[in-house]
Length: 365
Ligand SMILES: *Cc1c(COP(=O)(O)O)cnc(C)c1O
Image (tube, helix red, strand yellow):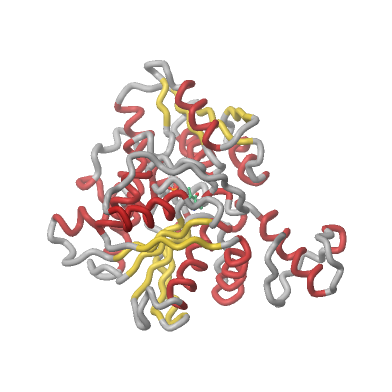
């Protein structure tokens, strides 16, 4: 990603040892009547798009003389900070809610970061991390709070445009929790447009989980009232897409502005839709993403079905995180489906063979 240094707010004073960015834009051809590409950001060093933000945050932290870093995380931001901080020999602390997926916790610990598990939600962890950074030599990476996260994530937009010959797709589908990827992608395309490198803006389709739908709600309300709300409407998330599980999105206003500036749309999807899409991406294309990333595909299917996205549109889906990040979520659904298929009723892990089988999805109670 440092190839784009002239368009970034600071330059790195350290040599990056890990290869962040430069991920492939995979052409999947015709899918559901649109031309589909997947930007496979699961191939970043820690397995998620978060590395783009972390890389820039750590460069800034060094620049400012910080010697320690801390972040709140639902898992991926913490794994990313732990990974890149390890490569730069910087001590890192990660504050996570108790229900963080096991694989993500294991990853954070493997890189040697301090883990503080709190009895609360991501939103609580967020405030704890900010208070821990209340010392001059500690940098807080919190998504949306640290301004460099958005700037790092915009490199993903640069790469998409470059891979398309400095053109832009009609739509980019963005899984959305805090809204920081959404604002980062919009910022990247705006930069290119402002510089005359590209001649138009893509439209952004934000994908939220149904129970974690603060941005979708406020986007809808702002369409009615014409004004953007100054603070997010709090919601009560309960979704297996843990990376999208946010009560009060921390990049709320910039996310709404991103939708407004790109004539965007916001779609909410259920866990059942997310897992159906996860299977399609894995079994049709060999792309296994974590549920939060599969939410983008689910939102796309929905937007096509209700005519929001026109047939023949050129669409890029962001593959934000690897399926290995949360194998348990996928296994759980496979078990549910097995139970449904054999009419065993309730979820019974002991009889799950672990194989994905092709039966219609049933909503979880
Ligand atoms: C963090 C994350 C998201 C959501 O990004 P926000 O900036 O919180 O909207 C989506 N998918 C994955 C895999 C993530 O790690």
